[in-house]
Amino acid sequence: MRTKSQSSVNLKVIFTCCSILIFLIIFFGRSNISSSSSKPLSETNLSQEGCPSTQQCTKMPITLSDALLHYVTSNVTPQQTFDEVSVSKRVLDKKSPCNFLVFGLGHDSLMWASLNHGGRTLFIEEDRAWIETVTKKFPNLEAYHVVYDTKVKNSDKLMELGRSEECKSVTDPRKSKCDLALKDFPADFYETKWDLIMVDAPTGYHEEAPGRMSAIYTAGLLARNREDGETDVFVHDVNRPVEDEFSATFLCKGYMREQNGRLRHFTIPSHRARAGRPFCPVDVDRRR
Image 1 (tube, helix red, strand yellow):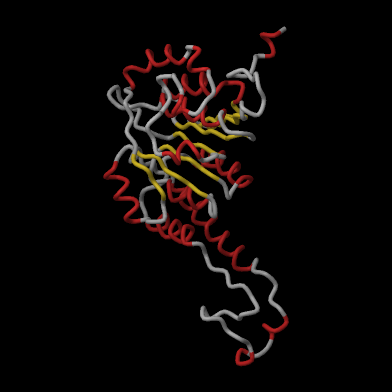
Image 2 (image 1 turned 45 degrees about the horizontal axis):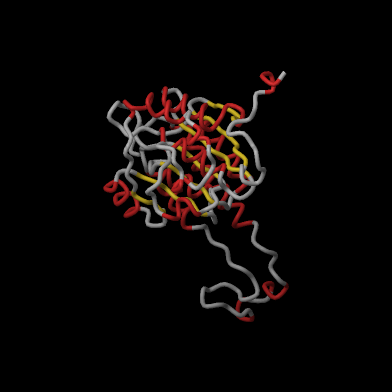
């Protein structure tokens, strides 16, 4: 997902400052030093790492230091605006460390992995060469190469198919009879309980591109099919018809929490935890 570099210098500066602030918090938030640490250095036992054995040494996480270095020295900034990133960050602040699934490997990937420090952030990417380029530079990022068999030009037909009863059935996507479900991805994709899902890929800005129809539908299916709890799902580029219509239809307007710029945030509960839950929440006005 090597798309659309933006001149959001403010976002770059703010991210850098936040990274430095986090480091200072970690540094000054070390556990209290025991009384033995007040002894002269010669009287204090040192571990092999050069830290007093009676205190815990804390260093900046590699993911954070990589992100700090990358965004300070790079002229390329994340695809999303500061306000859009802030929507997801607020949820990550509450849920991280957690399981975070991201459709797309882009210039913002290191940021997402850093904001979910201590958790698992998995990137799903259509461009194998791009994966090799990014992971060579940042080997701590976890990314899977996948293949999509849809095209934007067929989105209207897929929308009609998506309204069938087969597509309203909640199950493991691999067992779904809905043509929109992604069925041939790595097992990890289906077997992990994802707390957050970000749909910012695959490519969808021209007719021959794969589009995000199946990614959006499957994100909703993964959320509904978890055993319990709820999943926060984010869809970017909702200014485009496919992202707008498919997110509203398959993630449901009733589950939408907010829209900021081109980003929508949905919170989808488990449908397995409560039998009989409709695919989308019933409109209160419609029941009257």
